[in-house]
Structures are given as C-alpha cells and as structure tokens.
Length: 242
Image (cartoon, rainbow, N blue to C red; front, top):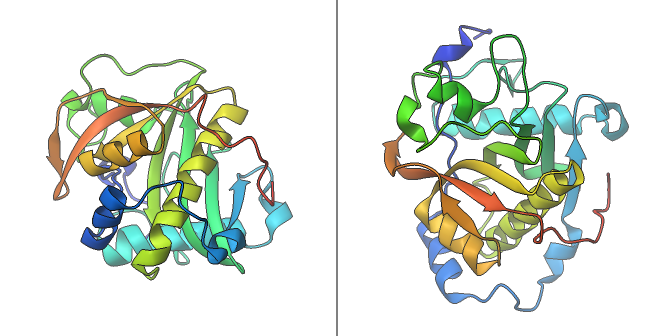
C-alpha cells in the first residue's frame, strides 16, 4: 500500500505490556542488579540528518515499526518497501532506537510541539483539530501545548519476540533514552497517550506523569493523554552511539 490520505491513517499511540511484564512491574524493584544482557543493549538517537552515520539502522527502525503496528496490530498505516511512516517522520523528529547486535528491539519517535509540516503539526494537536479521525478531538482537557520545552512521544514499541525477563530492561533503557533525547533538545516535558499501567511504571522509575485528558478506549486499550516530566530523569551517561 502506498501513501494515502494521512488523516485516515493514524492510531492512538499506546504502549503494550503483556500480563507477565505487568506482574514484573508490580513486584520487581527497578534498582535490582542489572542483568548481563542489559549491558549489550545499545541506544542510538537517529534522524534524517544523521542517519548516514548508522548504516541501515533508520530503515530497520521503520521496518520494525511496520512489523509491530501493521503486521501485528493490523493498523491501517502507510508503508512502502517494508517500512512504516507517516507525516510526522520529518527532519524535525528524533527517533530513539534500542538495538542489540544490529537488531532493533524497541523504539520511540519524538517531535517538538512547535513542529509544522504543511497543514500538520504534531499528533495530539492535529487530533484535537479534528484531522485524525481515529483519535477523538476531546483527547486533551485543554488546548494542545505549543512550547519549545514540550515534545511529543509517538510510535513507541517493543518487539514481541523479546522474552518477559528481558522486556523490563529494554523498556527501562528506552524510557531513559527518550528522556535523554528530549532533554538534549531542550525539553523538560514529554506528552503522549499511555495506558494507566505504564503511568504507574513511570512513577516507579521516578518519572512523574500527570493526566492531560480523559480516559478513553482507543484501539482496544484503556488510554489517557499524559505529560511526563523528563528534565530530572535522563541518565547523564551518554549512550554508546550518538
């Protein structure tokens, strides 16, 4: 399927946690000994301007998105040559990719709330403007923010091929990477649509999150727009590849 009207190809961005992982989040302390495999996980922030430095990592990231959102979830999204993309994949966006030995394990896309590309801005704001029919206009309590210190997180995913005992470490690495990437761009807060269990997990990690909209059942998930304070959360240690 080629590119179609982008307004009809958006889905709510939620983070899927399997029951076994949810149980681990409730019982396993985050500060426990780091498993050996966690040291092999690499974090790279890639975007259109620097993708040439990392070979096919960016295209592999888009292919991993297709595998999750189109092949597994069966969302109706534009794709070509095995890569999923939309109108928010612009030079203004940043993608945090967690990978191991060249294999993409997880990722998330960040976009400033000041973004503008033709008639589009960022996902939550465009939904509020009635441009994305899969996300209701009342997704936010108030007008969507347009501020340089607020970025939006979308297309967050983790490969379903990862066993439960690895998923928590990968998710933690991804969220730290998201916070670091956002703060490096001057952000103090990140907004997005998250399920309630993920908000509780962020609180356990020491990242505060406040609701920005009503609880909604979107794409089979109980979701809610939330804003995350990332300024004091990002690990100051630089990633292996940047």
